[in-house]
Image (cartoon, rainbow, N blue to C red; front, side, top):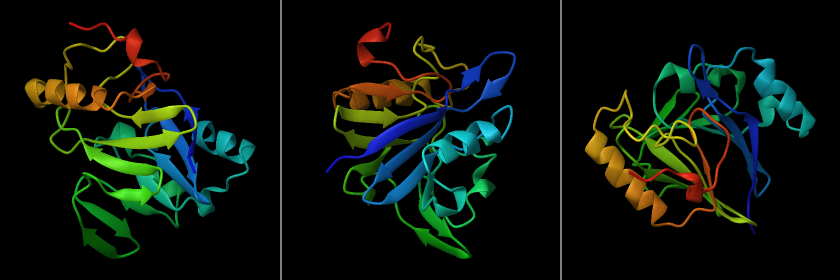
Length: 187
């Protein structure tokens, strides 16, 4: 069994900033990744509606990291469990656990990928096409090779190499449309 992945809103980072927001469906679960800044909340809610998913039925939300541009609209998902690098938050319960290797479903797991921030995680999704990764290791298809906001560029470079060793078929970056790893300009 494999998961389905849908980009609800492709992000951007220039004069304005928006997060790439993703819906994953697996085993009857709906998972949203990085419900952050968008120009209008309808950019998240309308595509969900179009896929037959009510925001109240989203069971899990994953934050790639804690910057507001990736978390700002989390409250749209009132019944979800929230996942970050070190815990699961549900209602008033905080459950400590490392993200690295944590399974949300049989086809969706988390991977620690520090660099942009020390707390970065990547969502790994096994789909019918192969492994798709939702990550902030790249902002968009063109990099940047050197992340201007990285807390630790060397750690980011190691995380990129480790992720590419998994041979993903598609990268869903933090602020852009999905792209094939072959499109990366390697420096």
